[in-house]
Image 1 (tube, rainbow, N blue to C red):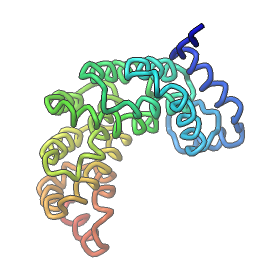
Image 2: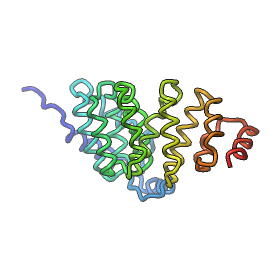
Image 3: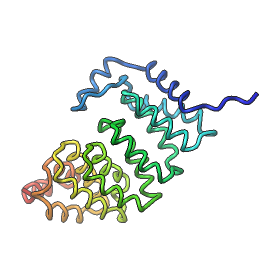
Image 4: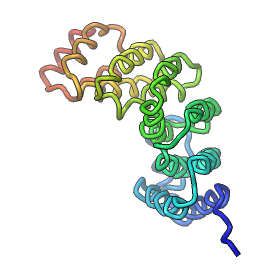
Length: 246
């Protein structure tokens, strides 16, 4: 008799059981200090979550496709716990090279529905999974630019952090600077930080261009964004840019 195929539902159950087994209420309580919004978590470390994800992936990698991985990710992202969302995302990322273009809109739906309702969950998903989609389907770059004007803060943050691993590449820099400029007016500290992070990454590939961009748009740039963006300049240059962009 053939062995029954592992389903997304069964692997989700194993993931949750594994997370509960390693739960640490003291660590969970301490995690809240990193978030302004209320989050639920089991209290695992990031390496513990990665270990669980790796173990589950090993169980399914021979028989699953991106279809099952996406279904698992959605199941786990519907769970309220931070680590559940992380494990689902980490397993989906293992299939990122074979994701269909339709995954772009599906992920947008997860963001709009607040299934990824904190900065850590968005930042786990977007650089690897969304970044891979942008590479595989270049036409999506134009589509994600429109996310900067979306009313949902997580969609807006995703428009920036999806480029974190691409920002150093010259072919994405126009998009990176365009998205950053579009996000400057947003009154949201989590967007300010994401934009500054993105600009800092872009600067690693071309520091002179980052400096010109900051000087050109200085007064419009939120100060939090600016401080993140200039972190890799030397101290004298940082002070100069802070003064010149007021």
